[in-house]
Image (cartoon, rainbow, N blue to C red):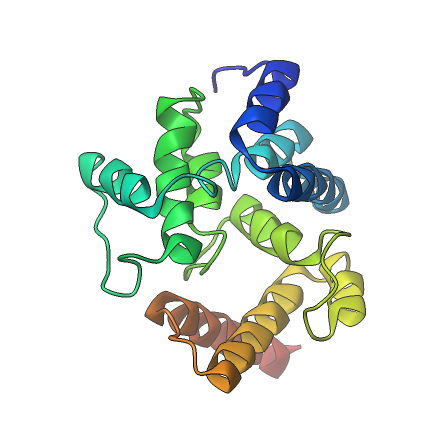
Length: 198
């Protein structure tokens, strides 16, 4: 992995992101680092993935789409025109092209931090969970319980976040990205099998 200068990266992100998103980014990086310590993962990788996870969040959705198309990333009908979904994929491209990140695990953690995916690596889970539980978040359902669970059983926390996200999206009539549902179904099955044999 090419070593990125953390201070330079933070200064650049401060210019590229709006203030609220920049504060969120720092909080996710800190939370991801704490989770990495808890689970014996490389702290520097977790922090870097946290810093870069929303690097494309504040660019125009048309530019997000062009970044993905140029990189040969397929855009689903659910992602097209949706910055809230597309910024993850675009962010993985931007992290590589603009910020020089070459670590595939970090790039995948950025790419899937919104929807998750079946078979996530530990780093991917950490960024997905950190994005949801960072200290600046306060509106999501069951946050205190999920925050506690995140440092005890990352898979259970992941499953609870996915479940609450699906319930929220369905209750508001928002479109559910099929990848989120697929990820939930995958981890629900795994957790059921683990609990069956405990």
